[in-house]
Length: 315
View 1 (cartoon, rainbow, N blue to C red):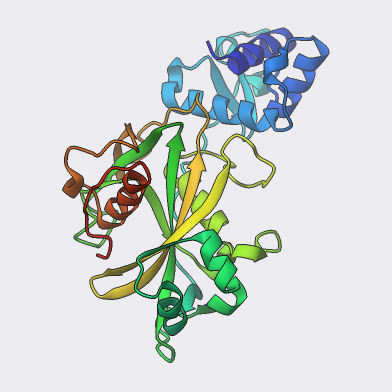
View 2 (view 1 turned 180 degrees about the vertical axis):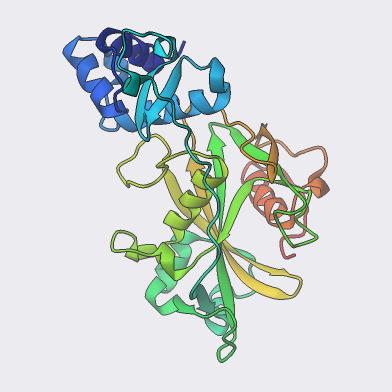
């Protein structure tokens, strides 16, 4: 069994009361149950994520259950009349869903984008930053506003684990675009809105937080990416590329998310299924089975590894 889960089970069995992940670890340190290899600054977030994923994966077969949001207990005590009734009450976390897009969206002035790319399809985020400040490139506008020719900004979050990359297939009602529905994808996409920006992510207009929220919501991972100090799922805004899906110009920000070795996703909803890992440095058998944005990103990964694979970057 996973070491974090073993620690949680031992502590909860000894205390016989529901506890938060932080409280579990506090008791574990007191009892000298935490091995040196597990030392770190964000262990409580790791423990909470693993407990949540274990409950999500195994459901009633899990050793654990939630007594309240963020509080965990052992299933073996559900029928123990020696435990207070309020400790034996099981609650179920409501599955998160995507919020409807409301308010201004993040856009980039078309002339500046085209001048920046100069006919290229992809630019590293560092190259973009070195040529123009994000404050000069991005602004918020109502989606129907047509006074300035512009590119809507989307974020495309790619989850990697070592040399593997997470793929999934989109349900028919998840995406209105014919070129994306029922296709395989390697990225969780979201249009960036003004609501994504706050005092802690002013430097990239909320692009990274929007991308992490898309991954967190679609994979049902609570609290993912809410703190920049979280070391379990480090992420980086790596590049930008251009897309013209059905003639609509978009600037796509690629967010690379590195998953820990222990992470194994489960199918979270009917709109996302067939989750599996593939090697990102090996060409898939059928590149045309992937959506246009995924094909473009995979082409870049393969090119960086010396594999010559052709696909249509601009959709």
